[in-house]
Image (cartoon, rainbow, N blue to C red; front, top):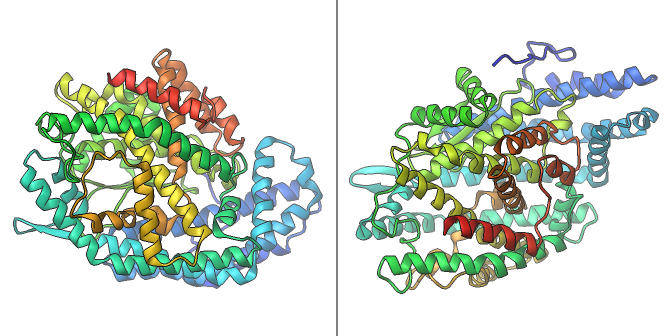
Amino acid sequence: MKLNITTRSFVSDDFQIEKWEDVEQYITDLVERPLDTLTQFEQWLSDKSELEAILEENLAWRYIQMTIDTRDQAKAERYAFFIREIQPKLAPYDDQLNRKMMASPFVHELTDSSYAIYFRGVNTALKLFRAKNITLHAKIGEKSQEFGAIAGAQSIEYKGYQLTMQKAGSLLRENDETLRKAIFEKMNTRRADDKVKLDELFTELIHLRHQIAVNAGFENYRDYKFEELGRFDYTKEDCFDFHRAIKEEIVPIVKEFYAKQAKQLGKDKLNPWDTEVDPLGRAPLKPFTTGEDLLQKSIQVFDKVDPYFGDCLRKMEEINHLDLESKEGKSPGGYNYPLYEIGVPFIFMNAVGTHRDMVTMLHEGGHAVHSFLSRDLKLTGFKSLPSEVAELASMSMELITMDHWNIFFENEEDVKRAIEEQLETVLKILPWIATIDEFQHWVYEYPTHTMEERHGKWMSLLEDYGTGMVDWSGYEEFQRISWQRQLHLFEVPFYYIEYGMAQLGALSVWKNSKTDFKNAVNSYKYALKLGYTKSIPEIYKTAGIQFDFSQRNVRELAEFIRNVVG
């Protein structure tokens, strides 16, 4: 793959950020530069975009390096320095530049929809900006990184070895129930060691976020965050409708799955350590061995769907933009981090050889392809995606690759099993997504709640979205703190329901692919190329689907999956 390498026209090639003054000279230029003609205005937008891409990429590398090794204090400090020293000084200038931009008469001469979407977001930023929130945002940035350090330090001892939580979790798929139970207890006992620390951290984050909302004139952080996230195309009431649709349409199907699994295991109900095991006693699926094996097989799968997709992963491999294997001290989870200047993203994950890891790689690979397809858009702001669009790219990739999963597995029986597990997982995760989202609505509507009330609400929601088919007797305390595993609550509040919305969209993309694969993939590519230059409904329409999370659509897609699984 040959990429168009963008050369800098504004910022020097040897630019480094060691102190605020390194950035200030470029900010000052943008603040003071006259904008007397449309040509000058467009060049100013381009230079502003270039600086934004460079700054965001600088921060990205600090974050990436910190999450790869949370034990390295120097890396943590480099990231904290940017959050503490650079971002707070940037914030008032960002507001000043936004005001200068929107005050220009030439705004109205840029009538392309790309600019309309972009300027809409700028106006929202102007509406929300408060100088007194700058230090609060910096504080939140520093505090939220504590979650990664706490979670990254969690491990258990097994047979004389220290296992990361990701590696330990893979043992919950083993057929030996005595082993599964022991691992489950070890993992959750270790997590419980940090329950007070994480509760206190979350409480502090809630109070800081609430204060930001109040300072900006909002009653609660939820309403503020909806504005900040640019949720122009749906409301909190739509989220409530989504919650209800999941309870009424998806939970009963998931209950059927668990009831069947319990029966196959010879039990009336599942234990918490039974939910991941194969009920027919088959060994866990092993789609790959090492991180390198995972990558090469993923490239082959992507090639089958569209050769361009495979080339994206090859380019990332070529310049070492992947860190795939789980190791001690590594932050949990996985992500694709867009790098707006170079235009080649970075994939981070914690692979230990499981089927779930394979799906995660395909998921993050979908994000990566999105980054490549939108890399040549004119402004950095055009590439800054709403999550409802970003997750459509990743979740669709999980599903449209399924016809080529034989590359990961040696026999057709394993391929069939892997696809069935994937489709069941798609439905099983929807109640969890809705639970997390409804929990966040409550948390921020009632920010002065006590920790006891918080745990009580969580247990109530687990009851609402539960199937009654998992027996937590004797392990209720582990269940009460199970929300603490969700990184999004600590680091990216309210970024989670988008997974549910995008999952419905992805199912529609996959459904289309079953009748016309080539057209479905091409429509998917056209949608991803748009970045954020159209509204969310328009992007979904370009992908050949609807932005629809109504109860009717949830029911139809769930029935489609049920018919495929059989």
